[in-house]
Length: 260
Ligand code: COA
Image (tube, rainbow, N blue to C red):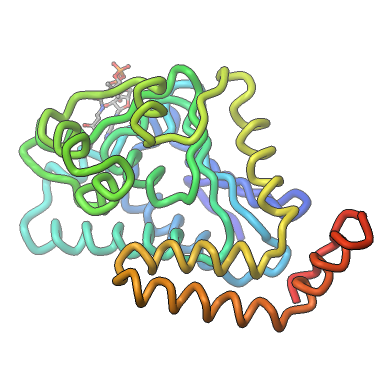
């Protein structure tokens, strides 16, 4: 499928999605959001895609937020619709069943920070900056910032970012758990891909179920979360990949998983 605002390619199981509006710091306008929805559907259904690397074009920005020129003319009804559309696209990405790593190559502000948080892991370049500056525009986050940020970094730190609207640098983002790794800019894509490929070397169903259990488990009681985990454990015990993984260990060789 061809996209006008995204670059998309698949190499050896890894889909690389690049938001491609560098002259507007990759701001999320209506076309980007529609195309992101389409590409997520493609990721979900294409068997050849085993994991996703998400980044922004250029050296300055991952995504500098929702497109403010579009926000400027919205009213309450289309404003709510815009938020719900964005929320559903990001949620679908988070639940696509395949690991998604954000390679944050610069500003990740507003919707950009929210998009990075909807990915499972975040690798940032040393020049990356994170923030939720919506309050400076007289609005609040609309694509999940008030929901995912406190879950990732805790309520107090999240409120500080959400209420001040100030940016934090990559080192601080790593310190508070907003990003997993910080690397030099020229190593960003390679390091993010290496992290993703480490995950892809594991059993695909196991990876899928772990993502699902953590995603759902955060919202469940301890008892219900443990039950979900045990159910997954039982289900995975019925897979060929579990036999292969355990057999490979006893035979002192590397496991070759098929996803079955
Ligand atoms: N929406 C629309 N356009 C945006 C944008 C956004 N969120 N962020 C940047 N752009 C555009 C700028 O308008 C500018 O376009 P122009 O060249 O046609 O004037 C271009 O991208 C480059 O940005 P510029 O502001 O000139 O770069 P800078 O280095 O001076 O500043 C930022 C970088 C990120 C600090 C600044 O662009 C900014 O504050 N952006 C908005 C961030 C924001 O509030 N996001 C949340 C939105 S809810």
